[in-house]
Amino acid sequence: MNILRPVRAFDRYQQRRRWLAIPVAVLKKFSDDQGGNLAALVGYYAFLSLFPLLLVMVTILGFILQGDSSAQEAVEKSVLSQFPVIGQEIQVHALTGHVTALVIGLIVSLWGGLGITNAAHNAFDQVWAVPMKDRPDFLQWRLRGLLLIISLGALFIVATVVTGLITGLGGPAVKIGAIVISLLVNFALFLTAFRFMTSATIGTSCLWIGVVTATVLWEILQLVGGIYINHVYRHASSVYSQFALVIALLIWLRLGAQVTVYSAEINVVVTRHLWPRSLLGPPEEPADRETLTALAKVEERHQTEEVDVSFQTGSEEPLGRSPSGHLERP
Image 1 (tube, rainbow, N blue to C red):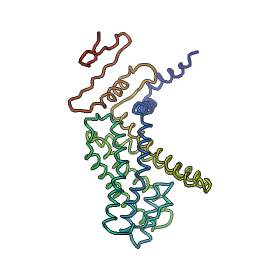
Image 2: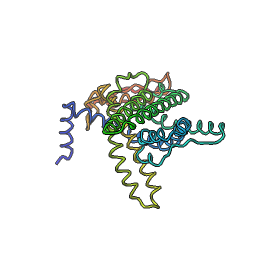
Image 3: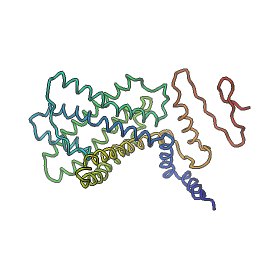
Image 4: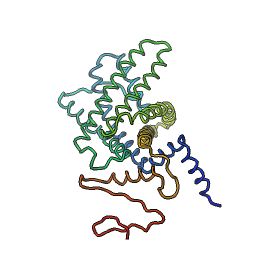
């Protein structure tokens, strides 16, 4: 019995149906790009960068909203609720101390927080197969990351104000308004993040599908993932509770990073028509060859370097390498 026969049958079936070929192509490209490793790296840097960035945000808002308890409560409900694991553990208080020391501390925290933006930039460039030679340099990456953080921070402040206004209305409009605002804020955040993290050569019109997907999946992750992780955390023993908090936060950030990378993959597959993909056998489909060619050209690291890709068919002899290093047939 051929155990691969059902897989081959499914492969032929999915290639003839667009509604199934696109999800399969997204999964295949996620595997080709080693998306799990990219998501793990983004989640790791998110864990390291989260607290420095929250320190900067909370300190600035603490100065701005000093003495206004209702505004501080709105911050906790709109901004910190985005983090279901630790949102209830953080209180909005301004840091105090010498102005010079405070400014230096905030700058260092902000610099440390740029780790997540750099990891995300690298992941998006890999997903879009941007050659190394065309990627931003050290300074450009940091400037783009800083602009992204400032933009997201501004959106958080706007969300805080709007949430505070709706909370003050009372009645059934609060729950409905909270859901609508959450979706709109997530959409604005992902649109801003995707635009900053994607190469400037790619138009904004190519990002909408991934942004909408990430918005919906993030809302589901906050609802379902937050309930599950909080359940695990609350039922942990007193000795294990601190470890449970760290583990829960790592899991939640990893899931969020995975959602983001998958959403970016959807943009690439749809924009570049990278379907259908073959699950077994050699890369004979045009989408397979285009994807593998792009992955090879990612390794171009200098403007004078040009990577040429060719595919060997079953009837052709294997490629040899000339003394100059070029592939050629004997």
